[in-house]
Length: 189
Image 1 (cartoon, one colour):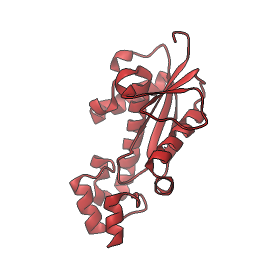
Image 2 (tube, helix red, strand yellow; image 1 turned 90 degrees about the horizontal axis):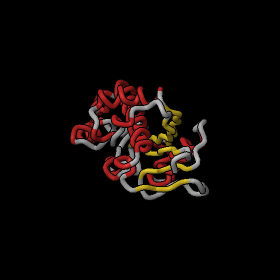
Image 3 (spheres, helix red, strand yellow; image 1 turned 90 degrees about the vertical axis):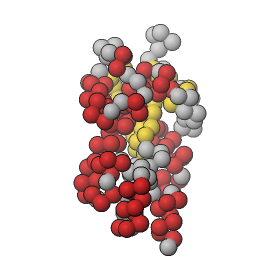
């Protein structure tokens, strides 16, 4: 695989109660310092934002997303694959193969390989993971400024106790995933 162009693909936001699922497809440039590339979940928020900016300057990357409505319509599994497909199609630098974190890739694409825990093992997937997470975190912070009661600036849409308490007290927004059990329960009351 030495001369092959590899693209890493990863997603973020599957387990959230609010906001889109975001994927990144990314090809690293030779100029990048690979030592800083690791699983995005192991990097603090501030460092992740800085490293994501560095990665974006030293790679070709594309972001794909699937909206809350698409998540509710197609389910999170299919919406995740849709966001991946969108990122992969938008990527300007065409790779020989896409290396996707996890066990599934979008159907009708032939040039991909899935890798379990790929974000921990493969540098281009780690980089995609960092860029996707930084992108989604910043999006949720911006959204959180419009809906401060849900504390999205800190929980990024995940179902923390503060978020669940706010959901019960203030109700469901258009940015909440209505098909997700905690949100659905509140709507069913």
